[in-house]
Length: 281
Image (cartoon, rainbow, N blue to C red; front, side):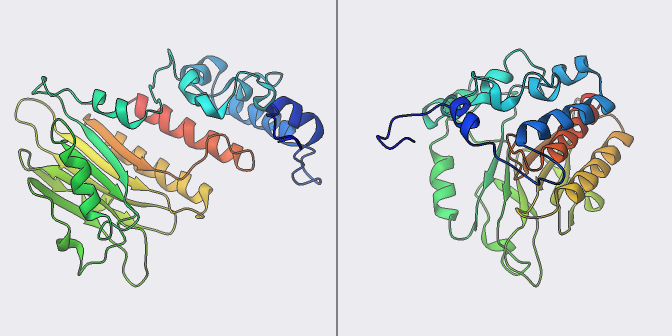
């Protein structure tokens, strides 16, 4: 903002604020993006990067992310990027939310992921929210439940079975999955883990007419090592890929800012792993 509180565009700000990072390694955030574009190319071709909707700045060094005048956080940059891409991931408001559900389609499955930040504290709010939906979701994945083994059975939802992994000995974290009682499943214990960089719970939902469905709730604690998370997540996806071919649904709370400059290389690695492995499932 200027002194008279008028709006100043990002391009103008860049001309006066170089956003210097570590002067020993990078002269500016723009150099960071250019460097990481070369890292990307060492993993995947330009065509594959574009297919997986990575920003142009990561593919063409001259098209720097910070110099793209079409970027405006007020209209959600990644809404534009995802148009025509293999993955649709758009921001929506409360009025648009119910359009995701198809009450007329009895065969549809609906999955919601909710960051609870203490499910005990917000349990009434969760039930109130669910009561406003036109249908009952098939799966409700939750993160940051802040439960422990002794409190896991205090947050049962009518009409659902609850499967969870909770921390022991320290506060915070925790993940869970509510599965509608119309479906049966089993907990996949080898994929349900609590680590410093990754917390996840997975179930296998049994299908009568088709292949079973794998459903997971994955959480990366904020502040944890992104490189460690990428390694753990890649190992998890590889294990899923090695199994019998099944539909896999992963609801994630990754705590990763896709527009962050300081960890751009790690974010690129995350996107490559996620898109490349899941596209082959």
